[in-house]
Image (cartoon, rainbow, N blue to C red; front, side):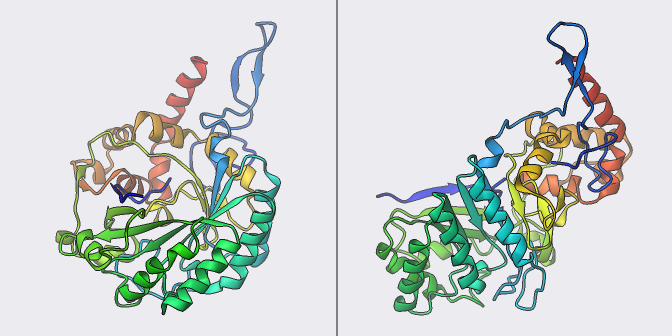
Length: 373
């Protein structure tokens, strides 16, 4: 076994039947359901069907569910601003319905649970995981490890998760979590992880300039053999907007043509469906629908048929920055520092009015795209 280390952004990383080009709900540019997409079989009449710009079903292999946003911690860096009294949540019936859909779908292989702190409702989450296991699906979970109070308690929870079919556990552990989850609890979990050899372990470490990932790694020394380490910089969104700018590492500038690393469906505890699990997405205008109403299949279709997601993935975010600057948006008049592509994306799509600014640009891009098909 070996220690696996990466340093990357924590991104992990779809519309109603439409009349017209822009969704009245999300404001995002969409292909629409009546686009001409090419000559028919006889070479004469053009066919009319939704344009799926990308993915072709690959998007459907994994779905992320955040049943609630409540957390036992109130971390200063939290991108979704979770806290112990947070009441944002999905209805239980919605979570059950999403699991039903995942089970029924031959495409979906993995359902990932996150939060908030998902294991605050351990019994309910385990029940959904067991249903997935019986259907031959895999589960993963992100947790802050609050349940590792002792080695015995950690062992008990790991056995329950393994029995429920969990195949990956990612523990969030860093300086920001320490006031709420002592590092010894994470150490307890890692000490007894051999009780569940079928589970892969990862540790997420958010770092600032004065609190680098190395500090957390030092505290976990001797326990990380075979554990995947994902270190990433603070993104100034959500609760982290209150962190001093001098603590944030800005590795890029807005004028770089950064590209979106990709999309994945997130049914969030704030009641919305998002196209990724990046640090900034919940604070953006990128919702593609109501989580209590949208199906997994329709959510995937909305992303696949969405022109904005095609552009940010293939052309790069520089396309949006250039157009917004040309259109006179003061935010983009001069280059500004950004943490990564996901941070820049959250700035570009921080409100619906900015999306509206790009309407004509989307129309032109769409017309050219259709003409070349």
